[in-house]
Length: 177
Image (cartoon, rainbow, N blue to C red; front, side):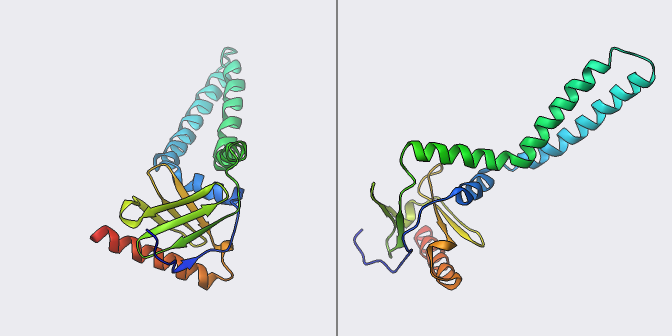
């Protein structure tokens, strides 16, 4: 795995926007549905508490306070969930000294990542997943480990697109072989 690199990034460091994009990408597909179901359950619970209150029952009022607290927590998680995950990932990465300047490169036979911590080469056929988004490319070296290549690691959007397109091409060729 020592081919000359075809394309590479400029040196860059991950930031919280990269980790937020990863948190959004890694979010299970069921989460949006669970939030919709939670809305229905909150509405039903509030409706039942209101019916009990209007019927003259004082036993339903404590439930109203609990529902309000639960709704506040729900809204915070709904609005800031990916930001909280990104913050936690950033904190862990800083603790483990993973937020170093790095470069990523493409070679015909492998994907390369290099930083002061060392050099990683992953054969294209061993990469289980590649995700191309508008401003980032996610290269999974395992099901849980991912390299994030942001558009800002290039001089221009065209350079980023060329890198992402070539990575996808090399990955698809290796997957067919």
